[in-house]
Length: 221
Image (cartoon, rainbow, N blue to C red; front, side, top):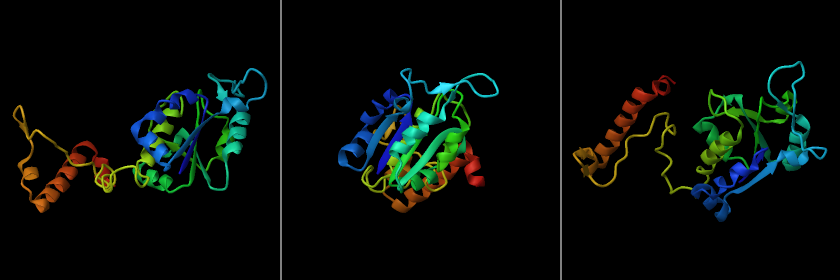
């Protein structure tokens, strides 16, 4: 799989590419990850990518020319272009699975007051990671990339992702490891019993309990 990021802050992705999940996927060949600075596509010596909005108003707007020229340099028939914006549809685990099946993702990061509206016409979809405002789309691009790459075959141990939160519409059940007793805080006896059916039942009920407590909206869905 290939993931391309269009951004005005390519330096933010240097350390991101060194994180274990991403670096292992790149080394193994499962992932090709590249970053393009759309400032390189500006015309003139000042590399200006933003301007004041027509009609007036605060802030600056990213111009369409450098972004669309950069996008054209990367796009091919297999590309799926995602524009990251708070105006988009919410990012979910189901969407991560959908994007993981793509051959080439292009993630377009906004900044300032946002994009010239003509840029949106060139995306295949618009995605938001939540109902709040960030300085730019770089952190959302990392969130989407991490969520997608961990679903690629070979990125995680076989079966380790199937019980995680949101995979089955519930939060994940509590997990414990050694020691079995830490200063009086004990691991539930059922997990030490060796009774796999009892453990499965306990985990299912705990997943529902935690979902009722922290995310009752998931149960309503």
